[in-house]
Image (cartoon, rainbow over all chains, first blue to last red):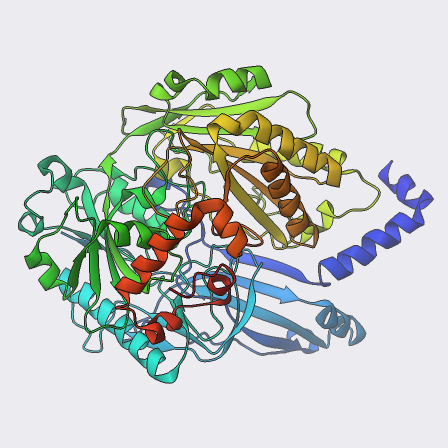
Length: 123
Length: 510
């Protein structure tokens, strides 16, 4: 039913695609985050830092990869924090680059926020 | 310790504010020696680090602000100079019996907690409700909002309201404030007529006591203008459960009869109502009553989780896209939106603690904005009609939610309407229609002589004229005088904490 509606109204399809590309900035984003909490209660999203990001690429369908080293998930004394959440983003330009190079170059942007230190009891 | 990240692009959690910062500064409880520290050492290290940063900002003529969780939808809390990430300062401290002021009520002592500025509402709920020490009783916050991701200082300073019909808003459970203003010592503010901590404690936290009720009530809702708040003393309650029956469907006559009857509130703890502005006479009532806490009950299904079991959810900007779809009427879009809201946003036939019930934090819905405003419960019917008419006039897809709140003490508390405030909230696509719709609502409220106040963290504009309409000269004078006194009338110091939002509202000068 929906298919036939779209076939009959190509203008609607074009408008939809145009809006997807512009309003969505041609950007696809996947979020990776922790869930759960003590005694089964949902703690939700609890970042300890603001977003940090780095562009990265894989080449030759994964034969060569560019890793992302996270160095800011530390406290002032150097002790490490966990990572609370990660975002993998491809904007319109990155998607086009991947398509035009047939996947030889696949650029993405990786973003992350670090977790908070555990709240402790000071009686 | 302090860790400087340098220039960064930054946006708030709802992606309604985008900035390039000169320096994003993390501050945490670690120390260079790696030693475990006592509670007083931790509190003193944090306040010293922050005070030193303020002093440096003064010398370098930089603005400095603490960002909390970046939960505010408006520009109220930001600066483009130095933005301080306080989320890593997330400790809680019990108070020694001998540290209380002699007049502080005995029965409240075990319910009082000192919290660091960066602890989130969800973390605080876990700390209070699931004590790790056998000698400590389980406690609950007196009220919370729907979200649990804000830091405690962000929630208080921006006047997060909750829906506590017989208590007040989040600022109303704070009883002492430690704030850094770049002076020799941090300032410990309490109400003059409600003392909490004694001189020995204040000496141990290396602070200067300021027992002043006007300054305290002004500093509660001060959105970063009164310096950087490092800790609060908060009062809690013995743990309790809230029980929500099935959502009731009622008509406007019933709404009027219930909400205007003072006896209706006697047995209710939390009160929400939602309505679809395109429906003529249907309202959905969410009533939470307080019941005894029972261990071992299952956790309620978390609300506002937009991801299904397989991990699928709308893309970050899909909501904006759908709300702006052409060729589909606002009314039609609203039918879908409202159905989803009733299914995923309301508490129905559940029971739990506030920490189990109010857990919303994941908000990957970019391009969405919100306004909330409060009026007196006496004006509920007229305001509902205004909301409906304005929504239909602009053909917008949006859901109205109301929360009923008891008035409190903060000078700029936007929920201080008598006999109770009713907060109207709506989410809307973040585009040119957002300020236009807000303006339309305000003009209609003014035309009917309905006194209103805007949520400090959710609005498109508070300027001098609007501030005067909302609070009047006496409250504005009290707030400004309190700020000037706190800063010892040092304009240079006050300027450090000014931002465009404050200037626009005319609150940057004394």
